[in-house]
Image 1 (cartoon, rainbow, N blue to C red):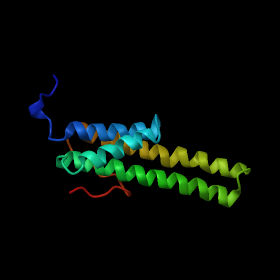
Image 2 (cartoon, rainbow, N blue to C red):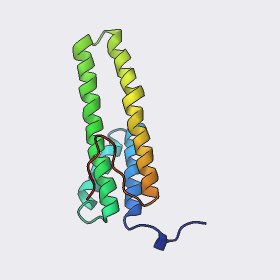
Image 3 (cartoon, rainbow, N blue to C red):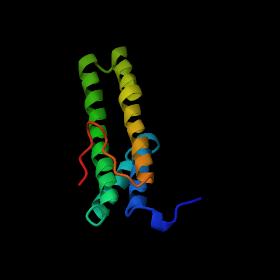
Length: 130
């Protein structure tokens, strides 16, 4: 039995969209997914219900943190070991295996919470909701 429109929380559809775009950004279309999240955040954040605003804020800011982490980590590995070192690529692969997959897991949890009509704050790098 599918829930009716009366059973969904205000802003739940936008929250699910934001979390879905976060996962698209991480797994399918990096950059394009973030542009879509940023567009939604700038266009809908001010008028969105509390649930949607929470998920929009989470996905926007965690995407920024994730992008900064990858740039800083890869630049640091190149600076420490050089571009030709096998250690550079070992650490880049380890980063993706550990950190990137953790961000994906948190995104799946965020999507599940959005589908349930509940707020979600990403651990460590998430911002508190209103």
